[in-house]
Length: 119
Image (cartoon, rainbow, N blue to C red):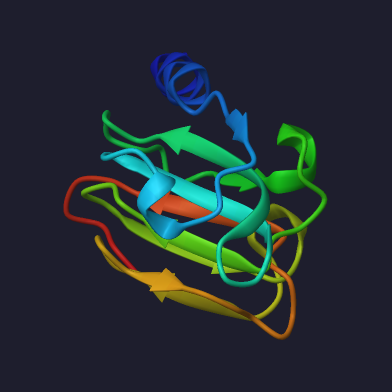
């Protein structure tokens, strides 16, 4: 029950904010951001990761973005971006401050790791 409550708290904190910002700098501090196109352009969704993440996968399509071609991790946590839903498929770790301006295979989900766990 405690694990379920903790996961619910992370989902509440991971409420996306949609934007059409055109640069990586538009990603707020302590957030991880995803853009629908390369070079940090198009629709952006941002996830507040100020609190320790749960380690559970979050699908971008469940948050209003079908897939992303660029990402920026401005949180203090490791974030694994994946090419499939529910954390499946090929993946890449974005350490704090890590970014990718273009990916060939779109990002469809991510997992944020808190505490001593990382990717």
